[in-house]
Length: 216
Length: 216
DNA sequence: TGGCCTACATTGTTCAACAAAATGCAAAGA
DNA sequence: TCTTTGCATTTTGTTGAACAATGTAGGCCA
Image (cartoon, rainbow over the protein chains, first blue to last red):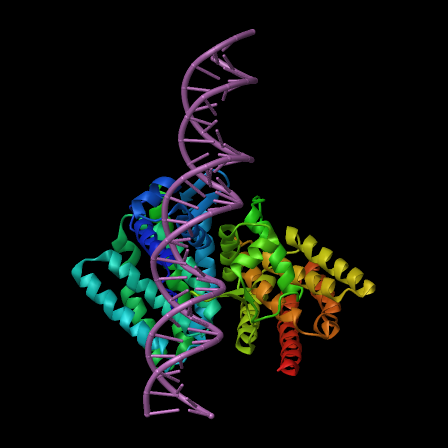
């Protein structure tokens, strides 16, 4: 996601925490104590603070002044917002996509990986491959800023996925749809591909909302 | 911009630095020494580091590992990218705008302020009012994430404005166009307003590019 | 029981120190 | 003279401890 020519320690720790959060080890709403977590991770409080800033900017943590940081709690409005923005971003980028673009290879790769993960029953892997597919769609647009923004949305969405069960319903139906979109794109029918993507995202949003409603 | 219920010290310092940068006190490409700047601002190195993280995320500073932070140098591709994203964001938000939305009042306010600043010959003020107008357009969409993203783009663009001369050419022509867009919106013609905005942004981009080319 | 007040715990910020990395300079060699 | 190697210096990266400021919890008193 990030081009990351920066093997800085805070970024490494941020990756660890990201995995813990999206992996469900940290439950949403949970408070993260600076002192204790710093000791757990073997880093200083100051460095951990920098990590918190990073993840807060990404929407994975919520920072309340003088009260501490908490694992973000995905809300219904947040999910609606994220899907609206995904439509706003991904559909035009796909529509102006061009078959020889390097990102197309990454789309193909994502489709293949998703199939492999599906065969192995690893639904979390399928979800990651799915997200990689959509990141590649945005990459078609060659806008570094838009890619970074979309990556943020994806991270926040993964947080929501993490606490939902029924991963098969969330990710399964989209493996073949991804393949269809990719096929239209490589045959030069970018408009047709984009036309598929809108309903695709609607369907995905409905699935998430349903699983989310079952929670509350 | 930021709802900012956080009067945190780093944010305050960040505002100061933002002003210094967009105000042209710091020249692009200039390196900022942690120790010296911390002493100048009367804060600790650690806190300054946090400020650097903030402004780096906003695109105003560039951070090179183990080398320090530098004032970002606006590039031609960056400007092209920013304007493309502004079109992608602002036009749809305006098109789905609705006359009773609270943000409309902020658009009106921005138009009025721009006129006042123009009368006073304060072109930098006009530029700020202009940006407030466009921020209000995005606010029509009621997406907090999109507003934050757009604010980032605006900050980066202000950096480019700061080092360009001819502010009258950059900001002057758009005062009346803002008023026209607003008028169409309040009369319920959101589509017409959006139709004006596209060419408007094209014209603005051309003006920036021209001034920028004169620099190099 | 309900509201206030005090003690405690946590965050916000600073300071001083050391390790790691990059920069600049100077000397040695071709 | 030009290049290259190595060293000293400077700057960043990270740590740990300290203190102030704020929020929280529990007990006390009416």
